Length: 451
Image (cartoon, rainbow, N blue to C red; front, side, top):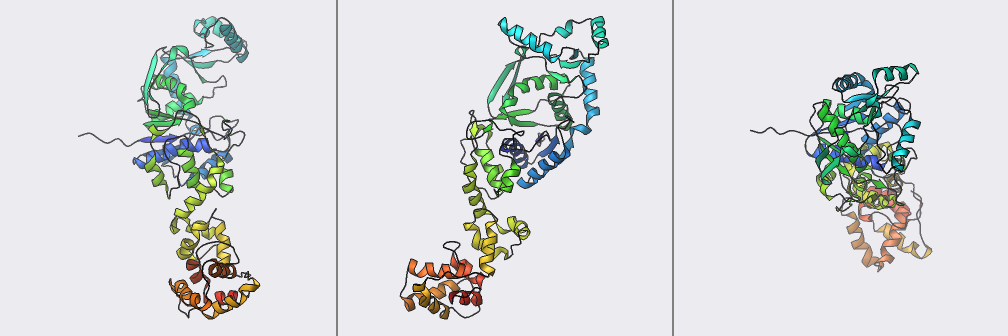
């Protein structure tokens, strides 16, 4: 009997800036794929760049994940795993796959320019492999410290990509990648592979800018005796202008979108399904989003993320949300009224903060808006308000008495009632609002009193 292997996926951001929607695209694909398949989702901070990584940015990433409702099954920090990288590096050195190189960046650039002039690809020429022990000792005596390169095998490296289908890259055309800087710090290409092996990662879903890295990482994985995960490379989100997104420049940061009142599920839907053949439409929860993910539906062209599309998507999302999904957030806004209030107003909200206005409309005081020509009619309406107790049918009962008594219908009937009862030109159905406003306040407002 075969054993079902539950997938293990990860999102490995660098805490060097605020996450933007492009980062969210990768995070969501991994988290929701794991959620749908009953797997494990790991949040792994790529924080070995001590000069740029900060605790504040790491906390901001955690807040962004929580905003989406994503709770990682495991949280790791690469800065706490250095011993593991040291051991893996020593193994590669012992096997002759990791070798020291002493060139400065200026020397490397001169060589690249020289190769270009000769019509050769600007890849590293492996000059460091030709150094004798005496030459290395002389360079180190001069104060040079080596960076360490991984020796590629120079062969076609293939994989079946979840998005792009069968892929093959010949590593002959690639430079041997630097895995360890001269200061001894590790690069992402190396630490990511070591962690993926150690954590049993089965699927890696990331941006297409990592396609070439995949060939390199597969060679490193195999050199370390690890199992190669299944890869999927999605297209990248851009600004409406076509410009790429940047954490450094703060493009479309999740924090800014959150502070603007956009709904997390709306941002998630737009981030996931822009640039796919799937419809971008509101969803009531993460499970609904996860159920729709189809990596084969992702386009190969860049996907333009237009924040202007978020307004309608945020409103549509709010219109779907059940009361338990928003109860805590309403309480934080000081909005009471329970489920009856939420169901009455959610269809008219552009952002959740709009609920504050409608709670004020219900509780008062509201200054009624009454045109001179409607005063007599509204006085009549006050007299015909049904007696207590009021139930769900009170509005229909009221209109049944008011229509024949006043002779009004259509806008001449409904608009003056709305303006007097709510002080607004439009809004939720009075059928739902009237029981919440209550008989005493409704009667006062119809008679022109602030209540």
